[in-house]
View 1 (cartoon, rainbow, N blue to C red):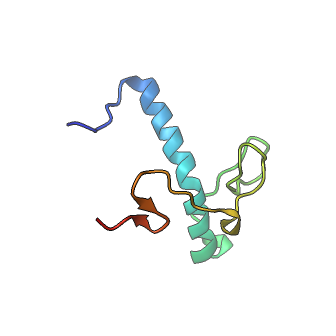
View 2: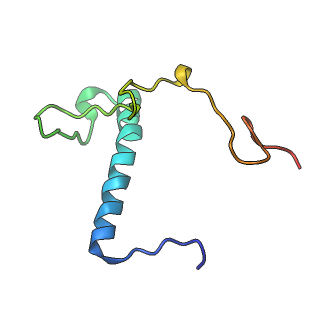
Length: 88
């Protein structure tokens, strides 16, 4: 099918699993923090340093933690506005 990614080989499959895992850590942590008591969390991850992982989104360029109030959307695609695609 056109547009469907093709997984080729074990190396690509392992890379995909790692990226998906990292991408899921932040929403998982949010859910655990909002919906569960600390003693109810079914799984925690330990970092190589030994401490429990608490994910945070940071900017690669400056290292600052990303906060919603610091973001400004800038549409780049033709016909898009901050609210999404412009009415046709």
